[in-house]
Length: 163
Image (cartoon, rainbow, N blue to C red; front, side, top):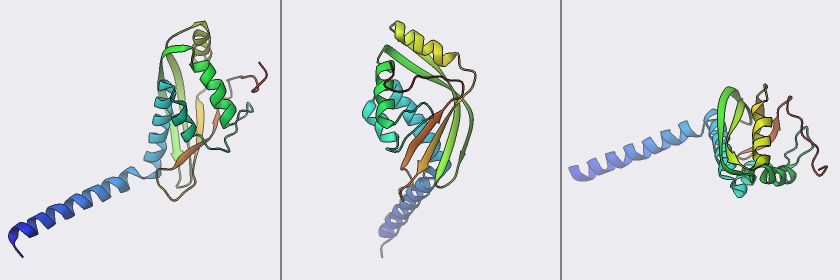
């Protein structure tokens, strides 16, 4: 074997090992949980409802009576009132296991919009308690996490379809 072939093989092997270690590091449950939380926030800020739907589990249910479909429908209505929207996050805690995780954050909304946007912003920003997001990991794919539930004891919402 020539020296050139040996060097090429060595560099290719190092490249493959680097990629493998990077994937193993990135696919750890703790990192995936925080990445999915950040990507959900970004999708909400962009009002990218197809992406938001892909993050939410079909079995989503919360204490206000929202399902995935009713939650997205009403969030679309509320957040469409913003011309620009930024979600400012104050992380409180997170915990994860290979099959589930929870992220607790205080959210502050910032942006411009209609009078309804100002009402939504005032309501969320006045909350003293943080939001808790419960995620689950259900497939063999390390990057497949879905949101099961959102909760904030201080937030009072009407049941879906009551307004």
